[in-house]
Amino acid sequence: MRDSRTTFPAVPTKNSSLLPHCIDLLFIYLKLPLAKEEIIMSQTYTLDELQQIVHNCQGCQLCRTRTNTVFGEGNPHASLMFIGEGPGRDEDMQGRPFVGRAGQLLDKMIAAMGLQRQQVYIGNIVKCRPPNNRTPLPDEAAACINFIKWQIYLVQPKVIVLLGATAAHYLLDDPRGIMRLRGNWLNYQGIPVMPTYHPAFLLRQESAKRDAWQDLQQVMARLVPEAQK
Ligand code: SF4
Image (cartoon, rainbow, N blue to C red; front, side, top):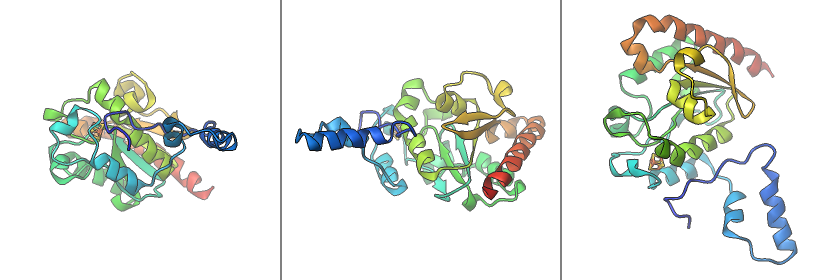
């Protein structure tokens, strides 16, 4: 059984996914005992299994103050994935992402794109609420980041929308502010990524909604040809 305090195993990349299996085969061929690390490396997960692991996770200090873990939800084969920073008070209470006022605005943004919430997948960088809705600390994000990477790996979205700078910072290791990032296509493991404003920011800064809508229009334009591939 894996120690729940260690960082969750990284997602296999396109170039590395076969390597653990080759190592396994080599060890089997040589009749050597498999090292625990390699067994873990070659393991893959379903979304349900990941959700159960997150439910029991004590990988960082946020486990002590959470009410519920907030794994993420939506279409497991969604073309479009939204990734935010972390759960707030309402999300912590309900165990679901983006269900408070910011979530209601996100629902409207999704509807304006001609989609329904159930058609997309919604997740966060950290799965437990940071106290007082503060930004996740680097060690908390580092402990949690592989969960969202596994979710991306399993859902295989055509386009990812990052909501706010924190999501871009931790997923893409990009330290730039959201004003610089938004509206420009980035890339995660070959998947086009559009950073835009977090709905919580848009609630405070109405005038930024026009820019956010332009970003989402770029996403819509990108999704249509992707869907035809
Ligand atoms: Fe585990 Fe992530 Fe919650 Fe930390 S925030 S306890 S790493 S699920």
